[in-house]
Length: 290
Image (tube, rainbow, N blue to C red; front, side):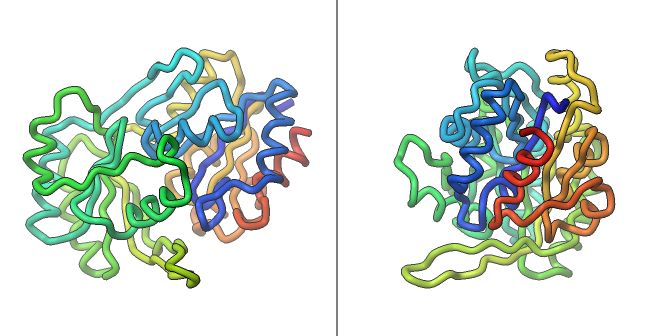
């Protein structure tokens, strides 16, 4: 019997509008009623994930920042953390600023950005459909280097770097990889999302990577929960679509890739489910849990 289901959000549980279908909500609730732990495992900051756990009725735990922290929903506190050091973040910011490439800094509370582009534009458009208390907290910062330098209470989960140009993007990533004490996700394909502009659907396409502290990944965060909850690897299902889901998909008892996932994920998955627009998560939960 599977006891813990780790589920990615963007491209997995959420459809291309950033929404959860009624079918998926219903199936998730049935799994919870059966005593199964549904753990959202996302690269998003805590407040953004917290609103989704409320929508789904999840009262246990979630993983934020690609594994940089584990949050106990009932106790309303962080119970595991592995943040990227401020001096490393400042080095990365300097490289991005000097090369005029888009980047965002994810703290435990919000997304810091210098302008609304790429992935942050998607979150911004997603916010417009939500009531204010459930929106992802986005803050536009004029001088990112000085802002981060003066941060005291906020912890930094990760940095994302984005660009439409393949060669520019990879030249910057090469420079960032020279910094010690960080992990840079090796993402080589374009991210493709859809946003609503009036009555039209507009594609947002860009190359991106995510940078975190060394050894930060969703599987390490899951291992922390496994020990806490006394759950074995073979009792876990992990569902995702992108390279930041790879370790949890290849190590879980049942690793599941969404249809259309990045090829590296398809290769390590034991099962392929339907797309995020066709209730792929719900179909897996129905088949293996219910």
